[in-house]
Amino acid sequence: MASNRSKLLTAIIGVIFIISIATVYLTLPADKSFRELKVATLRGACGISFTEVIDALEMDKKVGGDVTMVPLDGVPIEVEALLRGEVDLAIVPVEFLPEYVGKGNDLRMLLLDMTQYQALVSKPSISSIRSLDGKTIGVAKPTSTFLTLRAYLLEGGFKITEEKPSAGQVAVVNIPIPAMQGALEKGEVDAIATIGTSTILSTEKAGTVLSTFSDWSKSLGLNGPPPLIMFVTTASKLKEKGSDIDALLRSRGDALQEWLKTGGSVVDKLYVEKCGLKKDLASKYHEWIVKYVWKGEPLGDDVKKGVRDHIALLAKHKVIDTGGLSVEEVVGRLLAR
Image 1 (cartoon, one colour):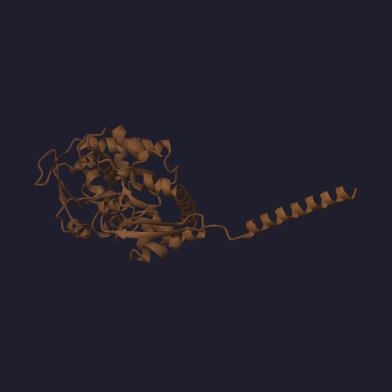
Image 2: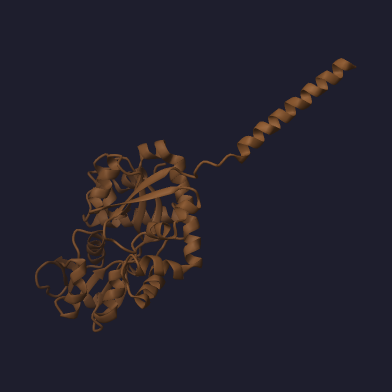
């Protein structure tokens, strides 16, 4: 009997010990949802990526992580930093990726951040895309907007020139983004291809929105959400920090919901304080940009279709170089996980 009581007491003590150990571990501070992640973005750009909203709302810290934004002077510099392992992710336009894949780099798309929200802003006398016949469009080169503009014009049957255009032609000339509004106001060009806050600034005095690139893509018969800004990493970074990267992508979803609920605070923190817009213009830009932030599945079938169609159109009109790879090979490598 004594022996049985001794065994029972030993068992009870063992259970208490296990429960005590479990309690200690369960009450220890939890690890961060993700370790520090360095994210390359374009220096000086404002209102072009949802990561800015994550940063403005400090959503990374709210979910227990740490995002460090690394501003760099150009998309190629962003991608090169990613390939060297100096950053973990890069926020880049899809148009620049096929060339790197064609050179054998293992880039991986993670998430569609923004659909195409570039716009053609024109003089009020221009009423349709077809009315651009014989006109001049200003656009900053070399940019994703320039590449897509060329592809869309060519797909629409226009011939492109840099000289004075004749019937059936559209002149496409290089104008730095800060000079676009003035060029349209002075009549130096008939339309400008804009992106980000420059669209809102241009429509205040210089012209009206003739078409967004998203609407233009649909009129050309392209399917799926027209892609623009992507979260991108490398195969090696996925292997090294896959769980951290996945946690960051989840935090984007949290930030999106927060942004949609508290847009006013974002307007104040981001578009006024960081982008330098006046409050009324910041509010207009918020209304504009909320339409184009991707709210669906990060890389669902519809996104994959949109990416495939867009890259195929760019390749068709030879505005990108895939290094001899087929469109399916390029897209397959970008979407591999």
